[in-house]
Image (tube, rainbow, N blue to C red; front, side):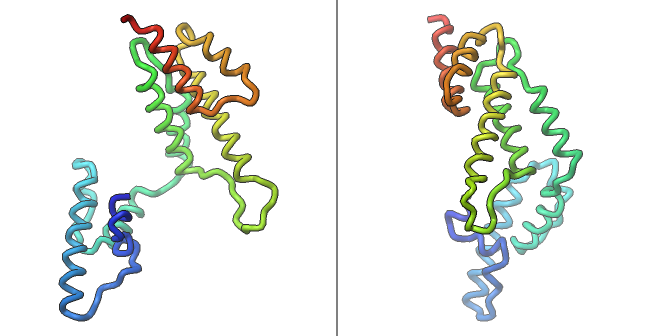
Length: 184
């Protein structure tokens, strides 16, 4: 996002090509050095040895995609298993639990995007229906992992609503309940 906000993503995806004139080339190299530096600084230090040192951001980006953007069944299964086992443990606040659960859930969506109409003429509303189903799945996952001894009542209240609340609304309802339980 930081790179896009500075209108530099074209250097990464290759749409801004290397100029031939001296002034343009000098500016292009300055931007390349800055982008390569930013990207490398964003990478976990333990992984830096696995990445070639290049001075072209698009080459670096392509290498990172080839190495880390691989979607396979094993990785997706691992994430789904972690999500299934994601629970609010004793002493864990709701915000921490929600953050873990949400990160895993978002990771699944990255590897397994929801169905959407691609023709642009679709009138069946598959996109919004898929998003609603995904939000309902996340809502159920949130309540399945939430400490039932503390939040059974709020869970029951939320599931009696018609239509079901969004995940965000349910999360905020549980947060209010948590604040009510907190000693003053």
